[in-house]
Amino acid sequence: MSNVSTFAPQSPAPAVPYIIRVLTAEATKTGAATAVAGLLVAAISEAIWPSS
Image 1 (spheres, rainbow, N blue to C red):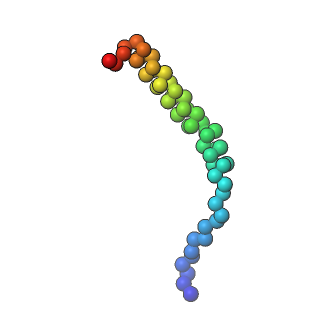
Image 2 (image 1 turned 120 degrees about the vertical axis):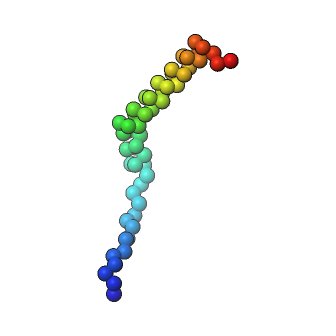
Image 3 (image 1 turned 180 degrees about the vertical axis):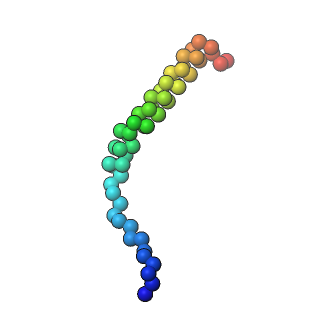
């Protein structure tokens, strides 16, 4: 018999709590706010200086 231990995976946790944690994380909120701000700046600059 060898002394090598084998990895026994545990049953996977439900994905719902993970998704809730990701969506309520501060980094996600900051990233979403940054994306919205970028789109707002792009829309305003396109309205002021049309590209075509």
